[in-house]
Image (cartoon, rainbow, N blue to C red; front, side, top):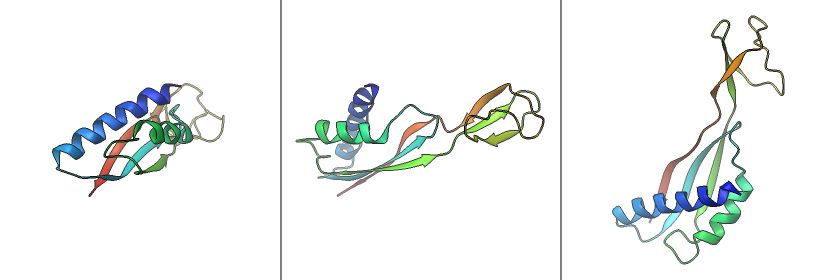
Length: 113
C-alpha cells in the first residue's frame, strides 16, 4: 500500500518539473527500482493510472529499470551480487553483510512534449 504515497510523490515531482519546463504533456517517466526495494512495479503502475488522471501526466508511460541487489561483506569488504537467499561472501565465506546496492527507487528522467 505504500506504493500509493510513493506514486503521489512521483506525480508531484513530475508535474513540478514539467510545468517549470513549460511542457504541455508528460509522455514518459523513467524509474530505477532496486531488486531489494519493496516497490512493486505493477502497484505503482496501477496507482499511476489513477493519480495521473486529468493531469499533464495522463496517459504517460512508466518505464521500470530493475537494478540487481548487491552486498558488501563486513569481514573482507568484498562486494558481490545477491544470489538467491545465499548471503555468504563468495570470497571469505562470512555471513555478516550489508546492502551495497539494489535498494533504491528513483525517478531517473522525465520525457515531455
